[in-house]
Amino acid sequence: MKKAVSFLLTGILLTGMCITGCSGTGGTNSDNTVQSEQEGQDKEPVTIRFAWWGSQARNDQTQEVVELFEKEYPWITVECEFVGWDQYFDNLSTQIAAGDMPDILQHDYRYLETYVNKDLLLPLDEFVGEEIDLSDVDESYLSGGMVNDKMYGLSMGMNTFAVEYDETTFEKYGVEVPAQDWTYEDFVDVCRQFKENGIYGCDLTNFEDWALYWIRTKGATLYSQEGKGLGYEDDSIMEELFQMRLDLVKEGLLPTPDVANQASGTEDSLIVRGDAAMVTYWSNATAAVANATENTIKVLPMFGPDADKGSYIKPSMFLSISAQTEHPEECALLIDFFTNNLEANQVMMGERGVPISSTIREALKPDLDLTSQAIFDLLDYSKEHSSPIDNPDPEGAGEVVTLLQELEEQVLYEEITPAEAAKQFRTEATAILEGK
Image 1 (cartoon, one colour):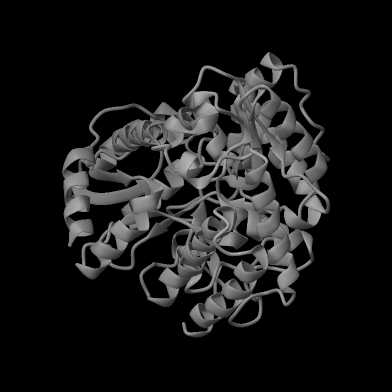
Image 2 (image 1 turned 45 degrees about the horizontal axis):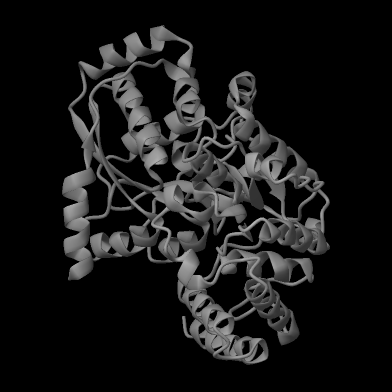
């Protein structure tokens, strides 16, 4: 009930009805705008609800894009709903239970298959070549949104797990920026140099993503790729990772959980406050960090060894259509607008990941700032230094992630040993996954 009330209040405060803007398809042909306005005179007004998660910078950008879309398609009104990542899927669950699911929603790789199995999403295949143009999109960028040979999500951008760093802070303390093929030992050495100057080398974030990456470097996967359960057999792999994080925190190179958890969002994170020089996160989040500080933020691949095996290119997030919507074609038009409209992408400038349309990527390059150029360069590097993505996360993955985070915190406060945590994780994660 508290979640439902919280979401209702959030919706009252944040839901937007966007009215003005200007655009042509591709951002270059004003005749399309005139044609859309003429077509709109013959159409019944339609309202669709669009939900996403994100930082304040993303929210502002998205509402600006929605305004452009409404100008292009004047018979369509888009009601905007946005909250932070930590609330987003809980809020969606509340809406789904109440039969009040948004028409179009930002979706995540972790939950895509679960939603498909519950018949909550509409396949997008019927709109391709009609409302949605994918002629400039490589097929490899579409595979992440496929479940059972149908497309249920279209990627909003390409993305990879990486190390974001504050170039200004590196220069301030005279620390050399590592090469792209750096190792874990290089990472520790850089962190120690910043500790000597009174700040953390790196923020404490995303143990789940460390685990996904780390296990892949060992030639295995977190989740089974054939059936239910975990995808690795040797618990020493997870024990080593727990130990690694514990060593980094005990040495003061990373903060303790209580310090890290004091941040109220990207704008208040340790790297933005100047209390940490780096943060491990998904590359598309680099823009949000950069927007929150005057310093220059850039990005490096994850450190090795075997980084090529561990790294993978992932859809930053998807746009999906609710199976409950009464206006699927209008939702598909909005998906196409985010994908192919140049003016819309000039607003976002890759904030949700490097655009999947080759035409849009080429058009944006001359206007990229230093941070965006670093993100684009990283994805170019990652194409040649990564391995195929794992299958979509299985049902129960959200519970497994919660378990993983709880065990890591116990390890970092030395309430249990890394070996005990690795053993407990296998027992409880297996029960979760095999019970679904």
